[in-house]
Length: 269
Image 1 (cartoon, rainbow, N blue to C red):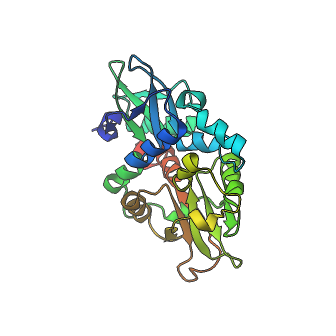
Image 2 (image 1 turned 60 degrees about the vertical axis):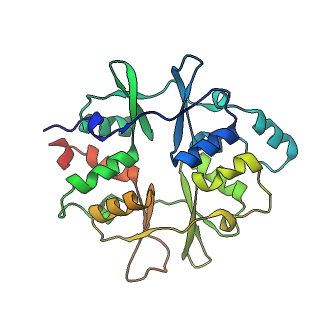
């Protein structure tokens, strides 16, 4: 039986008004623990989407009063992405995986009879792995990304935010002088700065959260379970024989979706 987008999507759509301030957007993202909100007009029609990435992409992470004042005047409509990427509820999941890879997006608005009925994100794909992946499938080391974005604990938050924006990564790994993993800074860690601004002396060590690591020889099932249970989008790959050495890479939801889109994968048969 073919699995469809509607079988995996999250029902309902979390929205905000176009005149919502960036501080209000940050609050909603944090309250609902989501990466994006859909922006609706006065008639309730979806006109755009605003994500934690959009918040970081602006020049709002500034310590000077003038820039902070400008940021506080911006609204969701000023920095939202439009048009919204959408997908039909009856689309087979394998086709949806291809679309995620082609468009490099984090989510799609799901439509049924031209009406929004839900959303499907990379996290939803990862959740499906626990049902569909076989114990003899490839290991973490076969699909992980060998390139990672890293910084030292003393790196200013502003520099880390700029690096994340320019590289297109949602997080930066924090390491010590010897390469030992200290933590991770993600978009969610920076959301509160939208409302409060950031002290130029603030470093990544002040805002980072603990990193989750996984052995390079672990199975994709193990990686999927860890991502799902902890609501993470990326795991740090290490050698369990030398866990305090410099990390070997990272495995993310994008890496797993890429595996799903391979012509010879179990999802394409």
